[in-house]
Length: 386
Ligand SMILES: *[C@@H]1O[C@H](CO)[C@@H](O)[C@H](O)[C@H]1NC(C)=O
Ligand SMILES: *[C@@H]1O[C@H](CO)[C@@H](O)[C@H](O)[C@H]1NC(C)=O
Ligand SMILES: *[C@@H]1O[C@H](CO)[C@@H](O)[C@H](O)[C@H]1NC(C)=O
Ligand SMILES: *[C@@H]1O[C@H](CO)[C@@H](O)[C@H](O)[C@H]1NC(C)=O
Ligand SMILES: *[C@@H]1O[C@H](CO)[C@@H](O)[C@H](O)[C@H]1NC(C)=O
Image (cartoon, rainbow, N blue to C red; front, side, top):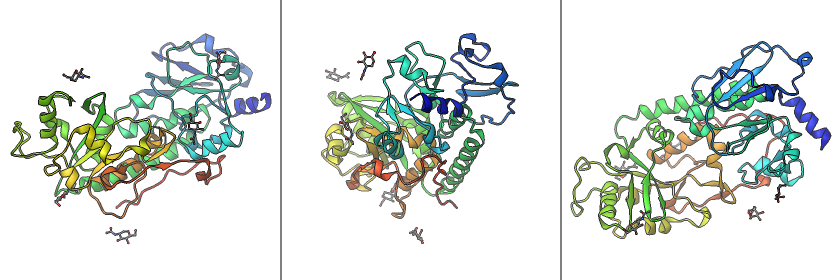
């Protein structure tokens, strides 16, 4: 263990000062423990944050400062940087990466107990996502989830890159992703004829809620669609309440038999994204959806007649969705999926989304699906565009 940890320490830059609130707390002396002045290296300004708003990278003469303003959920973005080779431990098996699973299965990655400070202190940097417990200095918060747009979330690769002295690789990966994303968005924007209306909606304990998450609404717009929420007056609908249920059905369908709701007279939902959480996505089917939303008469729902009900749980390991892992760093693939949902060609295989209306199933990720050298960087998957 000692030798692997020192090799990790060599690879991951320990001279990183970690801030929570304001970057003006410039010298967080406690966390500079162990910094050996004689070993400091001069660094240039290599990584520049363009889109993300919740982190900034500041370069001093001999040290790097990475500021992170928010916190949330755990996440691994190391594979695009070819950092899997230096990943030695994980603290949760909720990992939807076939190559992390492969390393774990072969014993190259160990499961660590995150409540054991001794187990963690041997590692150069440990990316975490919650802030409730006091953290040792080698903890770095990694929180792309607070960002408002898909590209801002993806740019967090530079945050990981800065820790690992892989700024150039991170910049290249992000540039490729961004260029492809913007190219696809331009193609989508040129489809002037018809803007399908999209609704992201999830069911929890008897209540359907329309999403408030701005990055999802941005995906809809970038894919050439329109969000339904512009025309609704509340976000949650309790199916046990008949008025709520009528109103929800009226939003999703325009029909003379339902009480007309002002401003909804011409709008209908063409594409529905069912975000309902389930511990067993594999057995969540069209009938689960219809049951939750209490739809018996199918006739007035365009998303049913057009067979366009999607979920982002296509790729998963156990119940951990790749949507929360790979999809964050590769928003161009999410956008391409949504464009296929909004403007079907029948010629594109989606990565993260499956069509519930066509009874498309989930794909379980396994270690056997890892088909690249875990010590090298993976190129982002570029979608044909233009
Ligand atoms: C992790 O460590 C804590 C504190 O030592 C201990 O209480 C807990 O049982 C350990 N968990 C596992 C899964 O070993
Ligand atoms: C939904 O409505 C039912 C009946 O009015 C009520 O019992 C239930 O508590 C409501 N659920 C929520 C989450 O508000
Ligand atoms: C839904 O079906 C109608 C009629 O077939 C078609 O005009 C429309 O483009 C379809 N919408 C989508 C989003 O595929
Ligand atoms: C899934 O989770 C279960 C229970 O946590 C675990 O026993 C199993 O090894 C996990 N992996 C797979 C592939 O089922
Ligand atoms: C489907 O893809 C193939 C190969 O990429 C292409 O030659 C063909 O034109 C596409 N068909 C449609 C309907 O887009």
